Figure 1 (tube, one colour):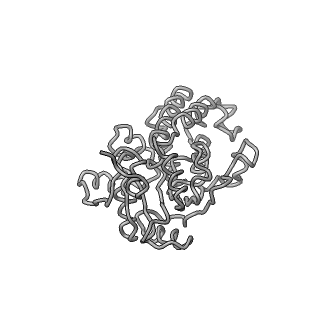
Figure 2: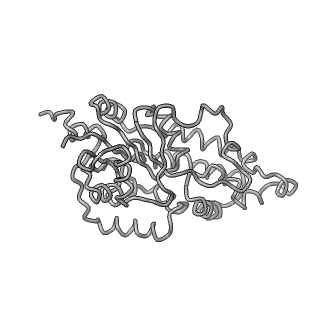
Figure 3: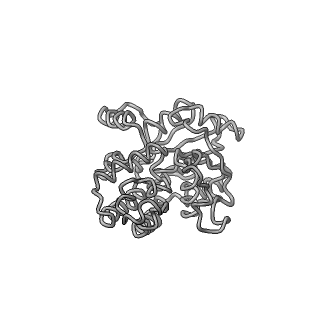
Length: 297
């Protein structure tokens, strides 16, 4: 049966999410240490607690919920100023500039997805990242409209009394996507649960046999696709877990301690999840797998 739909993971598959996160978060953390005088170990521990509570490492209200940053303020401000972040604007400026500079598509992604759409296929994106920053990355990288439908996790909760609008400083039309349809998966439903992939396909009238799924994680993406009976492609070029910088993410992550240890163990065991196809070094290798391009030589 011909392929009618591509389901693509996003983080570390179409863009290097880890490089963008580390390239913005690590220098922000260093600036917080400098500006506040609070030790890195204390800040990391408090950041980890907030990320655990909020379920994301991209929490927009992070600085206001770090007790040590508030205590580092002059006494006259410690109990009066709710907007702690205003006193650490330099750190936020570093975070934002680092995010913009490091959020980039992998080579070949835009051309590959454009050609897939031109061939009449539907492109669905699925990510466990939260909606707000996923939408920002799609706009920033020019994928609004290239991706037909985005499935992402609902956004994180906000502190009592605060609304999404309180975090927004730009006109309403700056936010969201114009041409890509946005949907949410149920909160707490995670890869490699095959039901979420099957439900996505069913929502748009596709069968498993008509779909191809590409993602960077053998344990999550490839295992899920295989369990759902969907042809799987491993984006091997996106694997980030072996980078030394990845330890910072583990220290401040929203993942449970059990999840972190399970990931370590599975990497050490070299689990025998064998992908059907592999893109070794470039997303555009997908064109050959889909029969939209022939190999040369």
